[in-house]
Image (cartoon, rainbow over all chains, first blue to last red):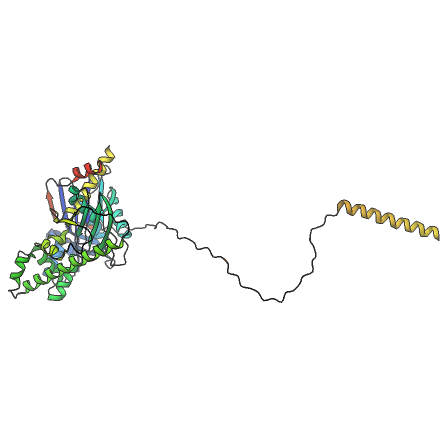
Length: 340
Length: 98
């Protein structure tokens, strides 16, 4: 059975034809005597990883702990879309997360995973990140192939326009962009700003911890960035209202940064195709899940400044799992081709 | 006295003649020529030697990735959604096969 794996900074998501599994990509190291800590975690059914005499709580439980105990440091195996170079315990945790999500392969199954495009605003290569993930997935017996994250979005959102248009994946660590023409990638790149960048800046400006900002962003019922709702928030003078105003502000800045860099990249590349007819922009990824996101995007988008004629801006259905589903489609087609 | 002079003279002539034949038969000149050198007082001239610029060669990186497996792992997925997963596979297949 083919599998698609979205290796995101905030979430790892695996898709098969009948299941989607999500795992928060975070962990927290627990101090104390190893045996005692293990017994306590087992009793409470909290998932953990033991490595080199250290116990790490993994996933959503770690995230929840970090919000309750403000002194607890939530660790991230990945940062800005790539392996976190400062996190020494990242690889065993990643290995355990991937193992749980995809399991062991039966009869040479295919697993397609996503990789970021080369970032334009930081000096980092993506090769090592790709190789580590490939090695981990291969270890579970899969035939492994990679595709670019934004292309995976294109496979889900640009099929009605013959895979022609602009695909944007807005993740926690980075935003990936691909300009596609007839299934070919004319231009692809990433910027190292995403949901984490919004959270960090909101946290600095409002004095609320980053974990709490993330939580408000992901689960607040009152968070709605749409223009009509936004006006009402101004009247309030609460901590949450301050956070919401800051979140909206930084979302605007993030989209502006993305569109400006897309324009600059597009104008700087030779042999880019001419688009005689308007094409859609399709957006997916966890950072685009916030209510009213399209309003913010439309506010920042200016057709007169944009180098490609745009027909519509679409928020892809089930944006959080779109990358994993795009990877799954590719894996299924590879397996069908192999059978033929 | 005159007889002795003639005898020795002929004897020396014969030896010289034989040596001449032997040299002609067996002596091979080395080809070296001794030419008198002339020391020039002109100053040396610096000549720029052509330097070929080596083009770069791409070398595949030797991947030596250690997997760092955990000793114990009890990780369970945070969220599992069961049910048919909707994808655009069929449309993609049609596009690829024209």
